[in-house]
Amino acid sequence: MDGSERRTAMIRRISIFYWIFGAAFLFLVVALGYRQLYLFDFYAKRGNRQAMRRVIEPGTRGDIYDRNGKLIVTSSAHFSAVVYFNEVRREFRAEERRLRRESIAAQKKAGIQNPKVDWGEISLSARKKILDGYVDEVNRILGTKYVLTSRDFNRHFSQRALLPYPIIKNLTAREHAILAEKVPVDSPMQIYTDTSRYYPYGESAAHALGYIGSSFDDDSASEMPGDNLLTYSFVGKRGVTGLEKAFDDILSGRIGAQIWVIDKDGFKYEKIEDVPPRKGKDLVCSLDMDLQQAIEDAMPPRKGAVVALDVDTGEVLAMVSKPSYDPNLFSPYMTNKVSAEITERGAWLNRATQGLYPPGSTYKILTAIAAFNRGVLDPDKTEIKCEGGIKVGSRIISCHKKSGHGVQNLRQAIANSCNVFFIKMGLEAGNESLASEAEKYGFDSPSGMEISEDYWRRTIIPTSKVKRDRGYGAWTGGDTANVSIGQGFVLQTPVNMARFAASLAARRTRTKLSMKHDPRRIGGLEYHGAGKMDLSDSQYEALVAGMEMAVESGTCKTAKISGVRVAAKSGTAEVIVGGKHLALAWMIAFAPVEKPKIAICAMVEGEEPGDSSGGRTAGPIVRAALKEYFSEKNKK
Image (tube, rainbow, N blue to C red; front, side, top):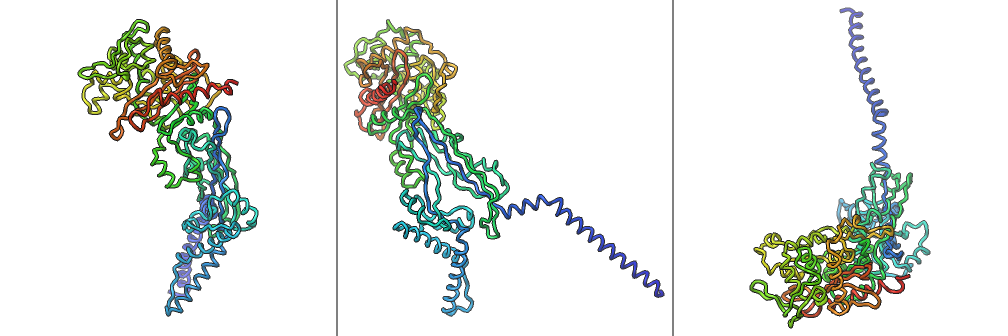
C-alpha cells in the first residue's frame, strides 16, 4: 500500500471519529435543550422548593354571644417572650466555635493526641447558653427569676427555624407592658402576641359552650399559595366539645400564609408573598346567661342537670351540668394537673345531654297519654282507690304515701303523684303502648341539637326485646309496673325530658332543639318534624289541670311563683350506687299554662338515702328559673 492509499484509509478512520463526536455533540445539545427548555418548569419548581418556605398562621376565632347580645366567649391576647433564630444564628455559631476551641484545648491539656468534638452536644450547649442569656436579660428588666425549662429548642432549630421560639410563656399584662417598652425594636428577642380563648363567665355554661384544643392540621392550607413548598405552621385551634365544636367551621378564622426566600442555612431572607389571616365569624347562641346563672345559683352543691327550652322554637335557653369546670384553665393549654382534677370530680360529663337516668314519676305523664290512647282512661270518670300499694304478680309495689291517697281521679293522681293509679293505668294500657308512645314523642330519636354530646342513642325505651337482649329473661307485669312510674329499665337524659315537657306544652309529638339563636325562627309542626298530639281537648286539659294542681297544692308546690300559672310534675327515682339506695330528684314544668313559653327539666342526684326528692330538691330550682324568666326586666 503506497502513501496515498494510507492517507485515504487514515482519513476514513478519522471521519468515523468525526461522526461519533458529532453525534455525541448533537446528543448533548438536544439533552441540554430538553433540560433547559422542556424541563424548565420542573427544575424551577424544584429550585423554588429548595429556596422558599411557606409559613401558615391561623386566624383568630370568632366570638360567641348569648341571645341578648352578651359576650360569653371571646379571644384575648396572650403574650410570650420569643427569640427569632435567624436573628441569633451568628451568636449560635460564635458560641459553637468558642465551645469547640475550649473542648479541644481541654482534651489536649489532658494528653489526648487526637481530640474529638461531639458537634451535637456542642450545638445544644451553645444554643442553650445564648437563649439563657436572653432569659437573663428578661429577668434583669423585670426583676424576675424565670428559667429556660424546655429543651426542645434544638428540635425547633432544625424543624421550625422560621417560627419564633418562646423562651418565656404566659407573660402577665404588667410584664408585657414593661418588656414592650424596654426591649429594643432591633433585638432578636421580641414580644409575640397570640390569642387564647377567654370565657368571661367562668364555669357558667361551660358544658354547653365547650372548649378548644390545639390543631396541627388545617385542610384549608391547600387553598393558600405555595402549596408545593415546605410549610411551617403555627399551632391552630379547634373546638373539642360543646358549641366550640358544633360551630367550629363558623368560628374558625381563615388561615393566612407567608412565603419567604431563605438562604442556604434555612433562615429567612426575603418575604415575597403575604396573605393575612382573617378572624372567624361570630355566633349568637340560644342561651340566656341571666337565666343560666339564676339556675346555677339555685343548684345545690351536688351533681345534677337543668335544661330550659323555648317552647315555640325549641331553642335551648339554659343548659346546666354540675359539677362544672372553668374552661379558662385550658387557655392557652390544658395541664395534666387540671385535667386530673376535673376527672376526679366527675366534671367532664355533661349530665344534661350525657347523663342517663330513670326519670321517675315525671314519666307518669307519658303513661297517662298511653292509657288515653288505649281507651282505658277517661279524664272525668276513671277513679282508682289507693290504699298505699298495689299487688303485681306476687309482689306489692308501695305508693310513696304509705297510708294511701284514697280514691283518685287523673287530676288528683298527677297532683299527688300516686303510684297505684299510674301502675294500674300502665298495666291496662300494656307495655307495648307505653313503648309506642315513648317512640312517638322522640325518646329514642335525635333532638336536633347541634352539639355532638347528645346521648339519645343510649337512652332506653323498655321492651321485652330490650330485657331479653340484656339477659334478664322474659317480660313480666312487674316490669310494666316499673316502667309506668319511670323506673326499671327506662333510661332518659334531662334533655329528652325537657323536650317532652316542651312538646307537652305545645301539644305536639316532639320538639326539635337548637343552640343557635334565630329571631326569625318559626316553630311550627313542620319545622319540628312533629305531629299534633293525638289527645282530645278534654284529655289534654285534664293532664295540664293535674300538673297545675300539683303546683298549687300537690307535690310541686316549691315551683310556684306569683302571678304565673305553672304546670309541673315531680319525680323521685331510686337508684343503687355503691350499695346505697339513693334518690334522683326530678321535675318537669312549663309556663304560663294559658300560653306556654318556657319548658324546664331539673334533675339532682342524691348523695345519701332520703336526702332528696323531686318537690323538695328540684322544685326550688324550677322556681328560680321561672322567677328569672318572668321577672320585670324580661317583660320590657
